[in-house]
Length: 321
Image (cartoon, rainbow, N blue to C red; front, side):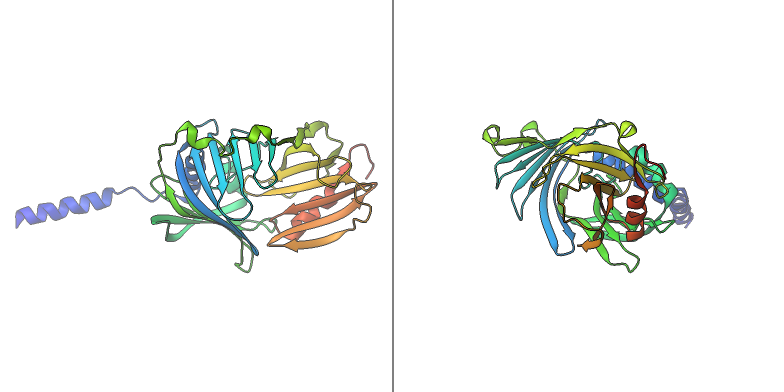
């Protein structure tokens, strides 16, 4: 009897000594680091509105950003190889290779830079909301609820041992799912060889080559924002050549660390019939307006008032209010 009591006391001691669950912000930090630093192989689906796509991801992780290869398994065949900030697109159907340098772009399951998590937590309440099971793995649900009306809710399910996000969704105020990434199969950690990260198109050197962007310093830009929604900042500015546009288009990217908004600025002579107003497609919205002899279009998966505020604040440098 004394032996049984000792075992019960010991068991109770172990239960008492169990560590407390990781809080939401710390788990979000682990997810950001895991998606960058771990090696994994998997298949995930992406959906937004009526559009859906299935992608195979192969990722070799390291703190410098790692190397990722993304191959679509549905729709038009394409591959993306990302090495740090250098992104190469292989468009198989039109035999085009497009290269870009994109410091801001994230490919699922990379949702945010690890260094931005604490900043993100200033604008979202991060809370654990139960568990789920995805791709045969248990995961912990995190809900990021915005503290203002400038952004939407984010719902992320994270595998607790590895920290890898298995699903990420954007929800509006009515709880409609506007956008979603979900793994159907994933191995983590995985052994990834250099050959696994190469594009499958062996004759890509013979394809048409496009360098679609020319980076510019936002501080010396011809355009600036008088004000921005709290938390948003310009993270990239490039000059882009776009199909059907005779003159280059200025592309500014803004982010709060969690979501991205694109701002396109082009001469009215590019498309003289362009108007102004709002448009929505598949959960994303766009706001357009003329500014002098230019046309501005703001696009993003954020509430419409956010787009209107950003678009209305854009001003040519040197102009008077």
